Amino acid sequence: MDLRDSIEWISHHEKELCLFNIDPCDAIQEGVETYFRTQNVRITVKQTASGSPEDVAVLSDELAMLAVVDVSPLRRLLEEGASGRGELGIADER
Image (cartoon, rainbow, N blue to C red; front, top):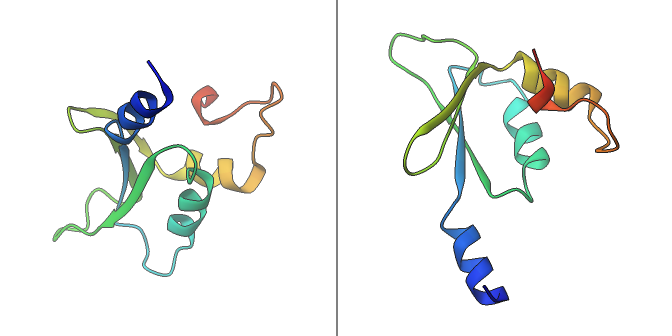
């Protein structure tokens, strides 16, 4: 696979992280947009008519839902950060 093919493949494998029913004044959307900027993840925010579920993040791609989590691990990740040098990151959250 050459560079052109690699770029094409990456562009067609975008993920979406949808934040459901977060407080409109909450800065988490901007924080996760910055954090995932180089990782081909599009951040969206949606409000449901019922307001439920509250503060939930859904990660998906064009084929499937990949993960559903409360936004609190994302908040901690943004607050504490992970240096990428063996420290825990969001994938290590229990």
